Length: 249
Image (cartoon, rainbow, N blue to C red; front, side, top):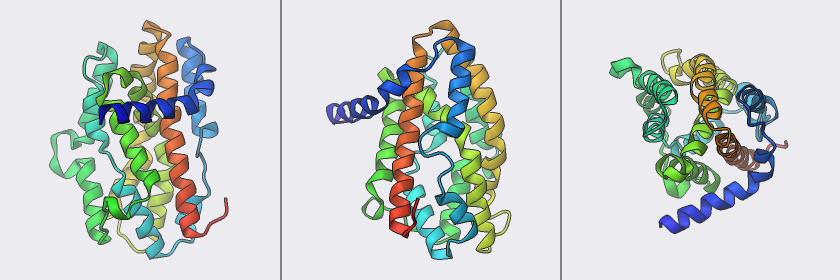
């Protein structure tokens, strides 16, 4: 199984290696390159999300969220796994991020259960058997990067780019949920991430990625690969979702 996982990850790396190699390796230059992924990265500003916000039926929104929930690897757990033996500045920033994910010690504020509550409210039944392979591949890639130490820097990039790009998608998903009748408390998971992840991204870039690259510029390429792997996997999901829902790009 470990060999299969490694081969899977190396194939994903090969797909993004050329673009990742073009990323600057000085701290400021790399952060500028990384933050630009919000606009020019794979899958960004996909028309799926405005369509969800403005036009999708309740059943179409439910299908989309079923796929997303089934492919959810658990951001809090991925952060916890990634921070093992990281240098101090990055480790502390991941700890702060994890504490937010855990509701700062308040069970009602934990992010994972918020998503589970939404799944229950919408009566979703996410299972592997009914999930498109692209969503499962995304979850597998994120898990592999967080659990295999050879991909630790990749995981820092992959998690960081989620924080960078999630607010736009979350805002549109929250709008879709509001339009189909969910209350503010029921759609809290997406409302929260539309706002909180802006700060999370800024802090992750400044306090985790930047010091890591400053300490060893070679890490920039691995962080870039991880970010591009995450975005490319997401792009494949969006393409598949649109195909299923009968949307043109």
